[in-house]
Length: 97
Image 1 (cartoon, rainbow, N blue to C red):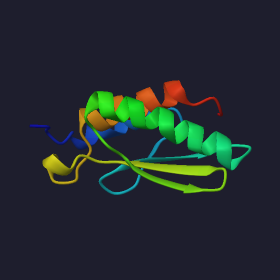
Image 2 (cartoon, one colour):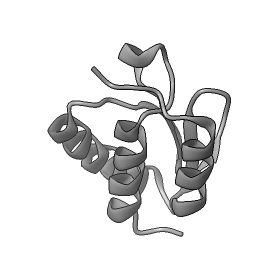
Image 3 (cartoon, rainbow, N blue to C red):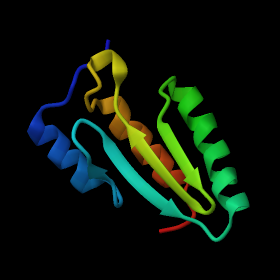
């Protein structure tokens, strides 16, 4: 079972991630792409990473904007190392800053 990170661990994790922020008990980031097709392609790539990690984010897409929200349900909807790891994997997939 996943364990919620302590406050200092969350702060350190957010500082170590590229443009992720904390929103309550979740990590979030927004990505802006040049087209809907690019955004959907990105979402498909995220799906493969999420499935491999057996950890599934909340994803919103409006045209070329993709918003990701990560928290771990089995840890009481808290931020865990699984969220930090998936955020880093998503950053590695992204081709926009």
